[in-house]
Image (cartoon, rainbow, N blue to C red; front, side, top):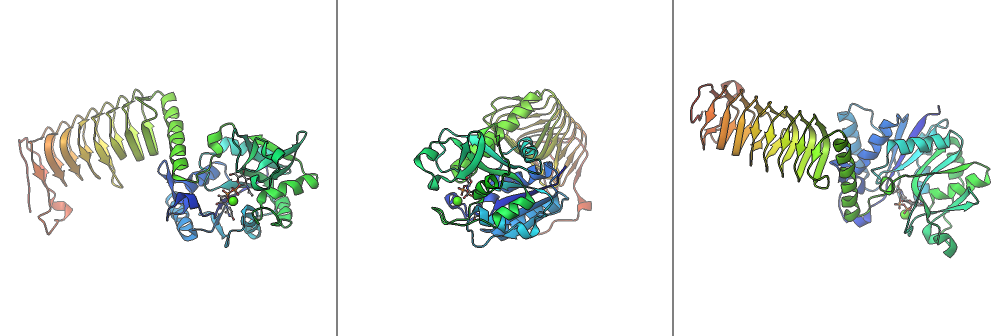
Length: 421
Ligand code: UD1
Ligand code: CA
């Protein structure tokens, strides 16, 4: 098996986003666009990943270095392209750091939904010796590079702006993904010129060199348009977000999760579900969330970094955010409506947290209840303690917060429990 080296193009400006944030750092499903592409490369077991940066280079490189460290992986390599003279010029910058003996798999930093299997098929089509292009048939191919064939054999890619009227009628277009033997790629890149309508160095011109050199050019077709769609504008970003969420919703529903409406469901991170989980409309899951068997989530809940044990019910309009410390909800607990669980909230089995109750960094033992308008901060609450309406447990007097050892402890069953320094 020939090693695969992934090359990700991410130097372009993204003018149509009209944003100060570099395009590839805009988020889809809670992760920057380019992170999706990197994660796909990781799933492919690529030997090296090289990212071409330009516009917003510091921000893009900084993000990728930090996210690699956080995931315990090596950072990708970076090459800068300044100025940006076209896609061929972009890949020329990679030549000094690209090993000769591998397959270069060229990806786009702003095309987030391509599947690992599709890329694997593209690498297989290259087989270490062919030029493999990922193409797709489009009803309206305006703006894209056309796949020009002679019989079955691919002869060239002609950019829209350079295409003749008959070429413009071709509906098979280049998606921006290719797999190519690196050594041959380097030779073809050295031959690029910019004598075209846009005065750019087109990566797509290597196709005509390959055909002239007798290299077999193969076209693999993408199965789904959304896999190869790029993000150029806020509208396209929102469209791909919905496509991505629908993909995740389908996977969960195939596992048996009951979503009231897959079109009103968002996972911006990882959601694991047990058996017989029900999720009502407009719920958002962020970071890492685990739901046990028979958990029910009411409408309009936002849940981040939390573990919710079997049989618990989260009523509508509840906000749970565990941040780093996490939130734990015990078996059969009832939370909400309108409850707020903050980092370090640990609810035991059958705890009840009702409307307008906020819990932060507090442990509640089995069966404890705070059903109305209460604040539980830095508290250890014993079994079956009942917080009365309006009860407050806080360790902040307006100026000082005592050391954790002086945490208030409520171990008696009382209607109200409050504590001040
Ligand atoms: C390119 C292809 C076209 C294909 C289309 C698919 C070329 C010449 N044309 O079109 O055949 O149908 O993609 O979307 O390759 N980039 C750089 N540096 C540059 C220019 C671009 O890094 O100097 C990056 C962009 O950030 C982007 C990618 O390359 O990630 C593609 O650039 P873009 O301008 O969107 O592609 P097109 O030229 O429109
Ligand atoms: Ca362009």
